[in-house]
Length: 392
Image (tube, rainbow, N blue to C red; front, side, top):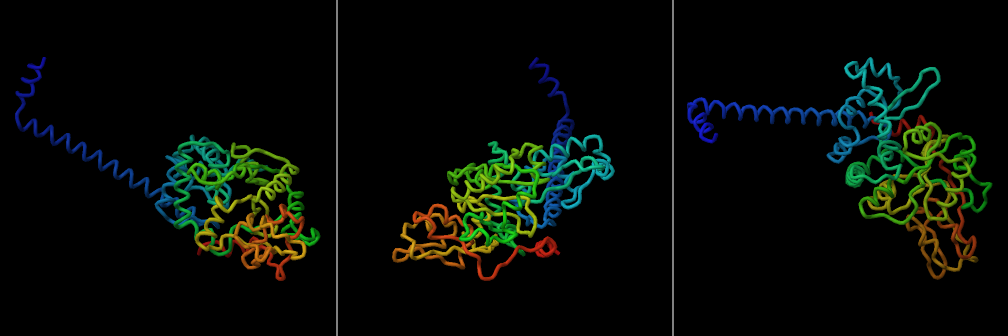
């Protein structure tokens, strides 16, 4: 048989052989050009998607880190479908099918896959059926992949990309216009609980809500995936209302009741975690319980000096007569605003964010408490917040 193949090959003219070689080379070049063109088209889609998502109040500045994140979170057709969705207006399945007729038969499956992945919010609306809209970066696709606490290679890669992105372009986004979040203490930290402002009355705000959920802190999850972080509990990221319902239905969080939510807030204060919530007057969709070592907002503030959060309307003050100079308050302060000087704790009022983390473990009892600031600055209303955050 070797002889037959030799005769067959030998019998061909040099021209025939060269022709076959040229054909093979041209075919390979066409394949490479096709792959290059296809790769460029995919890259163009993710750049379009980045620009689309950057229109949100929590935008996403263009970056190679961002494109890497989007390629993981919006695989295949999901990137194309995302371009047909709005961040602020919901769309029904039929509306999406009209907009993307070539995908009409698969759209429901694709959209529900995106909801499970954490890039699309979906809820049932009376009279409209199920509706869909894109989630922004915060609160949205920056957190949802990590809320379940599941550890996968994909999530570890996302953690690396988000860390690099935060240290580059995304940190400035968190501080643009007005901060996305504000610090809010629970009333037990105040010197006089009757002095709590309506916008800071967390317990009262929770009374007006009907659905509660908790997930694992995305920042602490990401830090652990990268071999960093702390020993604070992770199941401390709380969501409410429609957002909470979506997260429970799609496996991102577990449902809790109001009593567990309040108990978790008290526990978080004891644990040295800072409560932060939406920086909009009258709205409460999320309460994060943050540590300065892992929290993206704290890291950008402490390492880069960015104004990523609004401080509360309270400031810590020390009763010099009662203070025994134990230093516990200084050790717990997330921003280094407390230090012991000549045996008495001193508070830098400008640096203090009014979180109340310094108060529950005071060895003297209540030598350090929160007091209202002389000039209260309530959070902006929704219209003012959107005006300050939206890009022209």
